[in-house]
Length: 66
Image 1 (spheres, rainbow, N blue to C red):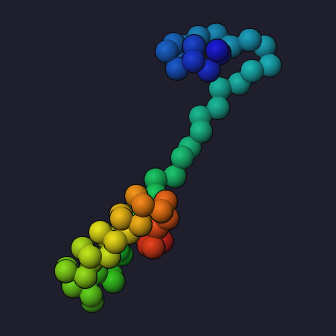
Image 2 (cartoon, rainbow, N blue to C red):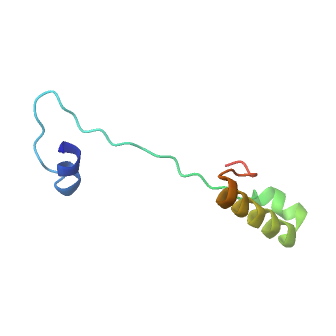
């Protein structure tokens, strides 16, 4: 309830003993690194990206590292 109130009204006063904490979430990108793409070519880079997307949609896993 308090969290929802703070989302809608960021300046809402907090009760004693409470503090505001901002949670940082890392941005994860599953793609072929540019240094590797340069050696394997555009066709293979696109193919690997498509296979990774399919594996993620079908099985919930990635073949590429973030």
